[in-house]
Length: 147
Image (cartoon, rainbow, N blue to C red; front, top):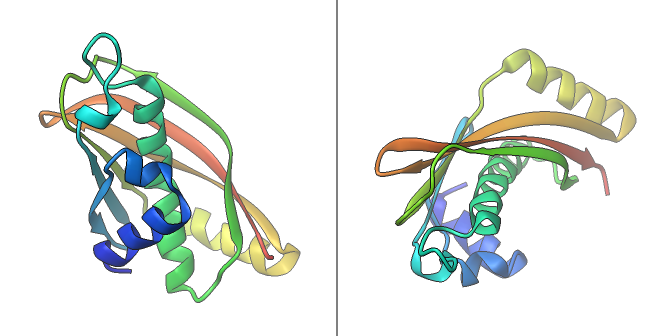
């Protein structure tokens, strides 16, 4: 899925992405990069609001899985089940979420379970970057279920 197509999908189906001014910079089978500016995501301390940071991380992992499932011509319902987020430093400006995932054995197990049982779980990591430095890390478990 091309970055612009993914961004259009996010804006149409997940309205908070428009309010956050999320931009899809890269969208490939093994990597999704999202960008968000500080201004619509600012808190009272003039840093990124924690909820915005968490949302961007969740979105990057969800988007990567959505792209992979679309490439496999599968369209299950995909939702987050559980996540952890560790903030290492305040984010004082525009920021990025990067989700890179390429673990063939886990993906194969996930797809087999989805095909066989109609439901499967998978965990995916992501990081947040500010000025080229990692400032937070995320791990999310997602559930896919055939509609």
